[in-house]
Image 1 (tube, one colour):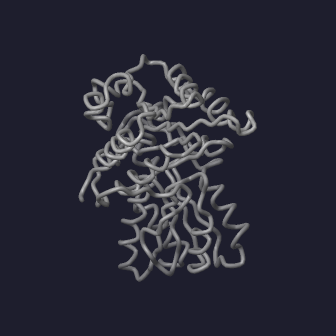
Image 2: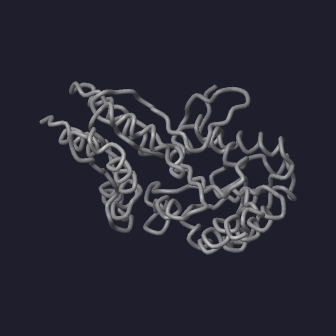
Image 3: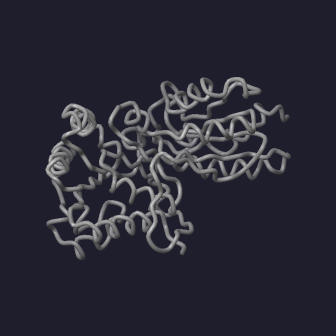
Length: 325
């Protein structure tokens, strides 16, 4: 069935909350306002205010509350109005959620999902347009997911909710209204498994979240130039399915990584390093990264567009890599 990304997330959480009464939803305006982006529409009416909890504007406070609830036996879902506000709760996420299982010698678990919109939308300014996935991936004890399609969003969110570890689940704000086919009935997608979104033979492109749509459009344009592009969506950024990426690189011999985040110490740098270590002898050219600019996101629309990877930049990178004029 055809569903929006927003509705796929809603469906995933609704199904899981019906299945398991220990699952609670907590965050700013998740209840009576139905979520800042209407992902939690209808939840307080169905599950009541004891399981759908509106909070004050205190990310560190309600994230810490959810961590304690998870340790005590509940399975909370924390909605951040934007992942940028996760910075306010970073001490709770990094020093408590990510470390409790390790520091307790496995005696305590934190089955917690922290989800919400990330990356740039349209003219939200420097403090609300950040791609922070590399920050979260850097922390041992956290799993990080960034789905690109409604089908993946539903299946991955259900798996994240069932996981015994804290999962940071990043939803690109501009994907909420996109639509795609979602399988009917019960299904989950395992965390840590990439997906080949487009098969090809000439070059491997790795892209996630809304950059996947950019990569797929670029691949279609390049088909007119006789280039057969394989597009891989990691889906889960940590743990990363390196095996699937390496298998593709061994086939194509070339690789481009597309990410919206900043270039310096970006996630693509880690992916490239891992591929070099595993498949150096199979590469016919250096790995190319197409990234966001290393600047705070401008508010001006033309400057914002210039700071984010787009189809022409990806096409140009692949042309250069493959020696196409």
